[in-house]
Length: 433
Ligand code: NAD
Image (cartoon, rainbow, N blue to C red; front, side, top):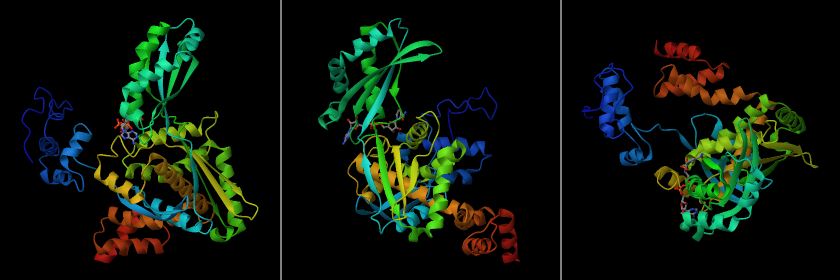
């Protein structure tokens, strides 16, 4: 670890956040600054020197001001069958019960064939905001009438994408009343193939905006994709026989739980959070953009004017429980971090996926499995029993247990019902006495 040379601005206090040159410093220099901030605690900072499977150069290239990595556990969901294919699904998550829930849910629908999915396509929307128009309807028709010219401009931006069968596929022009007056919003609908496509479509929007402005006399402002990716919907369905989930009473209880989410946004938010536990873990493991997926999912859940659940549950004629999920998934197997992060690459290899479509289908299936697990737990024992059983080891670690002590303390915590840090400390004191 090297000591910083020109980094801290001496004119300010020791704890200034103004660190000129921090971005261009080496990572070792940044760690030197950090160690100084922590009262010369080089040992604490040395934790950040170990990067695991990622090298320092990559971390530095991926983000600004990099000091290290934040490792998140990576696990494999077993038992999954998606569209007839057996698969192991890598999931990156810090929440203890997430992967266990997917494994358990997937096991219980294997007899009915697992998850059947469908995919609406990889169309990404880029928006161009046009302001200051007194005749927005004229502008709208002008733009719609020149779709061919717009297509040429957009497709020239990314010839590689065009050569792969992607490019501009459609055009929408919306008249948007706002508090600041009428705006015209142009949607460029672009097939981004196996990429999430944010950078690809953002460049298209920025390139075409001056032309749209020159045709209409508008002032072009924001030019960026929409994360409400409702042209990239992925759907999955699975059927759980009543016998696999505890009988007709459990089916009925789960349906009542699902109806609660349909009727109440307070419940729907938590219902969807559970779904995203699964989805975000696959998204993160494959190097995709978790924020984009989360934003899209929640915006889609509110698209009808009232926030609702992303899954729907019903009873089949045979008395089984059938679940469906419909969710926008803007995922890629190229672009962003997917191609440059070695662990993301490995995860894609484990999945054996060769397209954004395949990845999206699997991810939607995991979301549905996760929701089944949460709904079943909530409608029967309550979520805490399973969750805290798995969380007990974390609590033991927080209480100070190390090595073999961890499982000993966790086991005692599980036996006693309530899993608290105070109780873990008592068990630990007893063990060490
Ligand atoms: P990218 O910029 O790396 O571009 C992907 C490119 O890969 C395409 O333009 C295409 O030419 C090429 N390509 C090669 N093989 C391909 C194939 N088989 N299919 C499709 N394209 C292929 O990545 P991107 O997907 O355009 O952008 C994703 C990144 O943008 C993510 O890191 C995301 O975090 C970031 N981002 C997100 C937002 C947002 O969500 N609001 C905004 C800006 C940036």
